[in-house]
Image (cartoon, rainbow, N blue to C red):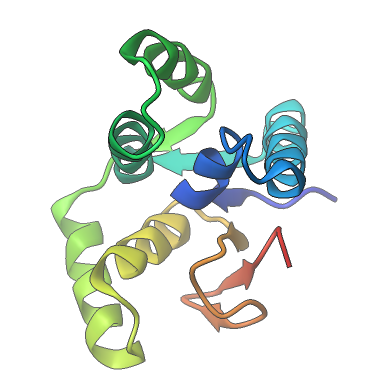
Length: 137
């Protein structure tokens, strides 16, 4: 059975990373599978971070970023609320997780996701009932 899964920003960035073809292939396959299974979840934070990195670091055109954003909006998108920020702050204080990663975890938990696909956290660890999986490792 498919599990609701939260997609971290780094997955979307690697989907654009032609300089890392293996990670790009893995990211694209994961995004495609989660889309087809209707199990992928993003947050407004992830979309903002994606746009920022795509424009500034990857130097992608605004037109390309807008096109990708329209595609990613087809996933369920969680709004980062003050309650999620509070939960992230609590997690940051109790589990030694960076503040922004803690908000990602709190968003995944709020969305009822069982898995968070991320390269940034300890794979195999579970926080707030969300299991962290590194899709590249």
